[in-house]
Length: 123
Image (cartoon, rainbow, N blue to C red; front, top):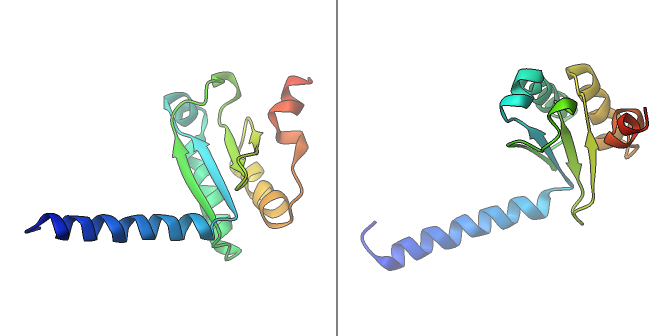
C-alpha cells in the first residue's frame, strides 16, 4: 500500500465481497467450537455438515464456528439461523444427526424437532 486511497479501495472491495456473500446466504449454520464443544465431538459434526452440503451441492448456506454457546451439557450444539435472525438450536449432535439436519432441515425445510433444545428440555 502506498496511499490512503489504495487502502480505501481495498476496504471497499472487501465490504462488497462480504455483502455479496451475505446476499447469497439462504441460511447460516453455526457450530459451537469452544473447548467444551470440541471435547464433546463438535469437530466431526462440523466436518459432516460441510461434507454433506458439498455432496448435495448446496452453495447458499454458510457454515461457521463460534465459541461457547453457554449450555455445555448439551454440546455439540449447532444453530441454523434464518436471514430474519430466527434460529433453531440442535443439541447433542453427532455426525449422523448432522447429515439428517442437512437433508431434512436445510434442503427440505423440515425442522428435526427431536434434536432441538426444546425436545431435550422436555425430557
